[in-house]
Image (cartoon, rainbow, N blue to C red; front, side, top):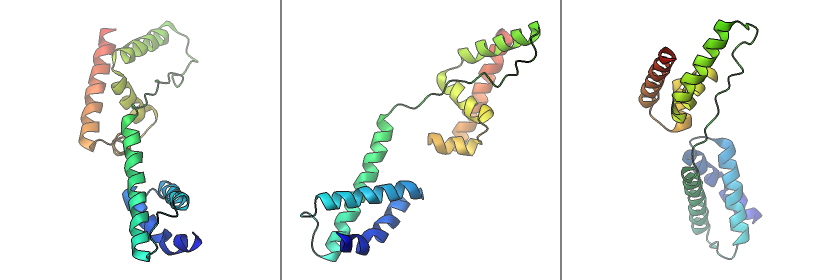
Length: 159
């Protein structure tokens, strides 16, 4: 097993880095899982060097595919909008009404719109970062942000 690891680990890691788009920690975890599966099924690993490398690369590729499928099957996480960032030092009626209007307008948005506005404006992520996190094109994130702001504005005007 030590010889198998020494001979093929670098090649498997290179493939995993490509498949995980440069996420080194994920690639190293997948390399470890690949080698663990090789150890568990050592009798299935071919004796020839080239065949063993193909076997390991196939296992690694399948692990990446399984990970993608697992993430697709899981529903998207929705974060609640954190309203604690609104300053509480001003206890006037106007600030209370403004806070109520904002909560009401945010409540009328869809969960996806609230999440998008929260990512861009509360967390401070760029549209490019949000697009990467959600796996969407940048133009889609920008247009959805525009329409979410427009819906929020309409909600504030109605309140």
